[in-house]
Image 1 (cartoon, rainbow, N blue to C red):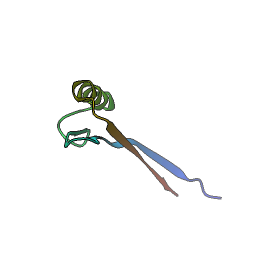
Image 2 (cartoon, rainbow, N blue to C red):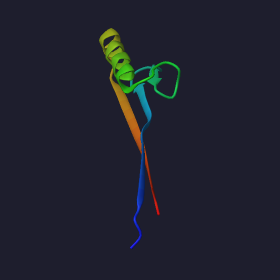
Image 3 (cartoon, rainbow, N blue to C red):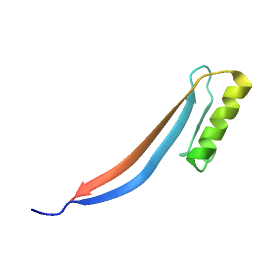
Length: 65
């Protein structure tokens, strides 16, 4: 049986979107550089507006022989 190689790339996107207005923030833009930066901006937006914000994070893993 051949050994399977696993390559993990970690977080490839992390995006926040307000459910009540057009505000958003994400790692894929120049706005934030880490997941904590995104969360800090989410908290600030919620405290300022009282809106609800949804955050989506995705990871990537390749499996090969």
